[in-house]
Length: 495
Image (tube, rainbow, N blue to C red; front, side):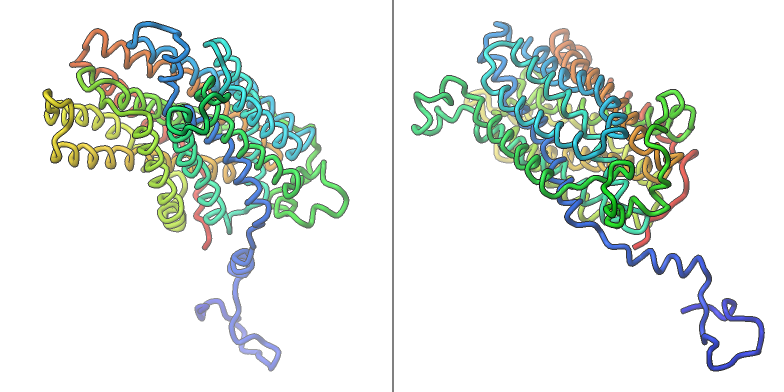
C-alpha cells in the first residue's frame, strides 16, 4: 500500500483525483513485474545448450579405459597424462574460436552461428567413438572444441530475451541445463560403454569393434535433436538481422536491451578489458574455471586410481553414477537455491559466497582415501560396511560443495548481462569472458592430471600434494572475486 507521503500535497480534490498515487519508479517496477518469459525461445536455448555438457562429460567415465584399450601406453600410471591431454584439447581449440564466434554472431546473426555449432558438436562426438589411435581422439576433440565455441552466443541470446524482472527465473532455469547434462553425460558414458560385453545383441557388430562408439552415438543424437529444435523454434534476436516486424517478439528489442546501434560497432578485446568490471569478471572467470575443470579431472583420476596410490579404485560405472548424482545436486541448487538467493542478495555477493566452497572441496578429497585405506580388508580387497558408508557420506559432501561452487557460473552470466557497458557489447563481452574460461580449461585439465601423477609418482606430501596445491589456487580465486563486488552495479532481481 502506498504511503501518505505519495499523495498530492494539494487539498483540491474532485471525483477524478486518484485516492492513492504511485511514484513513477514504483509504477515502472509494477509494470516490469508482468514481463513474461519467452518460453519457446528459452526451451530451444536449453536444448541446444544441453549438447555441450553431454559431449564434454560423457567421455569421463571411460576415457581412461579407452586410452588403455588403444594401447597408447603400457604404463598405467601414465594414463592420466594422456586422458588429460584428450580432455584439454577440447578447451584449447574452443579457446581460439569462442571470441571469433561471438564477433561473427554480431555480423551474421545469432541463429546461424548457434545451429552451425550444434551440428558440428554432434558429428565430431559421433566420430570420437570410432577413433583407433590417440591422434584420432585428439582430432575429434579439436573439431568438437571449434564448434562448441558457439556456447557464448547462446549465453548472449539469453541475455537479449530477458531483463532484470525475469532473470531470477530465466537464468536458474538455463543454469539447470549444465547439471542435467552432467547427469546425462556420465550416465551415457558409464552405461553404454563396452555394450558387447554386457549384451549379446551387440556382439560381432561395430559396437564390439569400437566399444566406446555407442555412448558417443547416443550423445551425438541428442545434439542433433538440439539442432532440429533450433531450426524450428529458435528465432533471430540480433536486431540488424531480424526480419521486418520480427522485433516485437523480443524483449531484446526494448530500450533496455537494444538501442539499435550499428551492427559493426563491436568492441575489441582491449577495449572491453579497459572496463574494470569486465576485466574482473574475466580474471575471476579464469580462476573459477580452473577450480571447476580441475575438480572434474582430479575427481575422476582420484576415483579411478587404486587405493594404495591415493585413490578409491572405482569402476567406470560407479564413477559415472557418482557424477550423475553430482548433477542432481547441482540441478537442485539451481531450481531451489539460486532463485531464493537472487531475490535476496546481489549477484556479486552470491558469486563470492559460492566460490569460497572450492578450497574446502579440494582439502576434503584426501580424507576419502584415508577412510578407504583404513577400512580396506586386505584379504578380500573390499571395504567394511561401516567404512563404505562413511566413505559415501564423504563423497556426497564433496560433490555437494563442488556444486555449490558451481553456482558462481550462473551468477557470472547475470553479472555480465547487468554490467555490460553497452547493449551492443553483450555478445563480445560474453565471448571474452568465455575465452578466459576456455583458456583456463585448456591449461587446467593437463596441469591437474600432471600434478596428480607427479604427486603419486614421487609421493609428495603422502601423495596428496595435488590437493594442497589446488586448495591454494582456489584461495587465489577467492581473492580475485572480490574485485567483482567492488566494480559491479548493485542490482537485485525483482520477483
